[in-house]
Length: 430
Image (cartoon, rainbow, N blue to C red; front, side):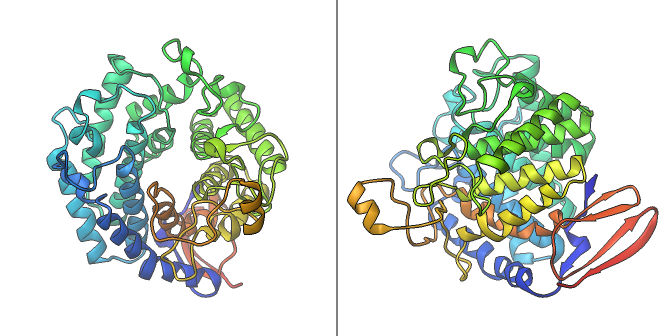
């Protein structure tokens, strides 16, 4: 099954009209301003020097990339010269500072050029994955290909050193994400190399000699992916991996991989998900805990983890028509991730416990979740993820299979689509 492009659907009224306007008018700009203040956008200049403020961080590229993807989703629906100028400028900086061989990462090019692809835990492939998704979204929205061409060059380099030469210091990403991005890139370009690289990273996970001494549940690399029976480890990483597994299962018609995805999804929604759709209840490791360990006051439930579950459910929805997947997406949209955004649109929660009892925490010295949303975090992965998730709601409303349209999200909206070779208009009022 396939999803519709964002431009095909217009939210007309009601609850989600408020949020679609909020993200366009407030959230996308607020996140951009905070990222400028903290140096995230300037990092793409690759001119930081020791002793200067705002030292680049290993995951900053991913923060900016998610913002670009979210902005691109907004642009696809309605062109915005201001947002396009920001993205075009950033793409130009990437093009200018990208190495001749295709490598780009603002931290490693600037701070540790001698350590490129030497440490599995340092988010290089994760950052590239988000930049790939940003490039695809911007190309779809505008037709501009500068950022996409930079990422295609980057992927060629990654394929060479990981698959052909096997000269990198590790085999699979420490933080999954690039797998899903590569599969989306394959759908966009139809280049078999992109599919092959995604397969390589997914099939090598928990299944290669080079990393046999560093396998862990935390990073979902304790066993090969087709043998996974339950969700475990860092919840965001897990959700991104499971989404990629489901997408690959659909592309390849891989029944064994699909079965693994079904087992994991069932385990999550039946025993490791809060009623809000929040996942990753364990503070230590931001991870899935054991079954039914979902305490209201200390559950962690990172905003990004809920988003990763929605991405997983979205790919499962493309695999088979089952209302469970759409219902899970709906649960996350209304609760698990939306609680991470203030009604003003410019403040965020990183974690989303179901209950906060300040006196209890002070008395017992337990993990103490924040009781007030803030505008930016040191680890600010959630705010741009909220931007791209709100901006991409239409992606999850309908799926199409031959002459059938499946509606899984309810919102007052008007949709244009082609089904069975005929143009149609679908109006939903709720």
